[in-house]
Length: 255
Image (cartoon, rainbow, N blue to C red):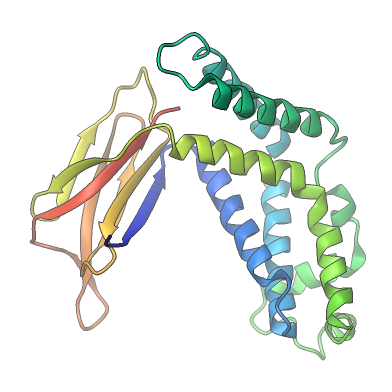
């Protein structure tokens, strides 16, 4: 079976934030146990990016609202015909467990990390090109020379404060992505547009294109409609809309 590349576009701010956090968590754990000090550097930068997102919004409340909304949607399916009730019970139990863990999180998420002088010193320098050089942050240089198990243990300890939210976002996005089946569409001349039902908001658009296709999907949209343009690169790096008719798979995730 030919592999596809999937392009996702969130259609509201909540899902946009969840996708950013999902990306950063994946980046963190991909680097966490790497043997190189550069892996530890990259994992720590991802951690600081996660902390920055938590500084900008009350994500605990946002995640709780979305958990409760999805729990309500699932509970309404309990007596619907054709529903796998055993699987539904498993999902509802998973939601219950995560809601309990979220209720167990007291205070502002990540507050102890915000008060960590070591992390704050790095955070202040990380946005400066080359600002975390050894001579700028000798304490950071010292930490990077610690044995790998020590660095991994520290990183694990720091990321743990976000674990209930990480697991909740993972479950939320899993249900969002699985809430609809893909349909085959054609973008004539590389352009496709679809109107949306505002009474049943689409949360996420997913466009699947063959991995060997010479173009990529550029998706934009809002509450009422979205567009997909398939772009290809010219030799000078400039991207233009393809003139080809593009066959692709579209998923509009509504849950």
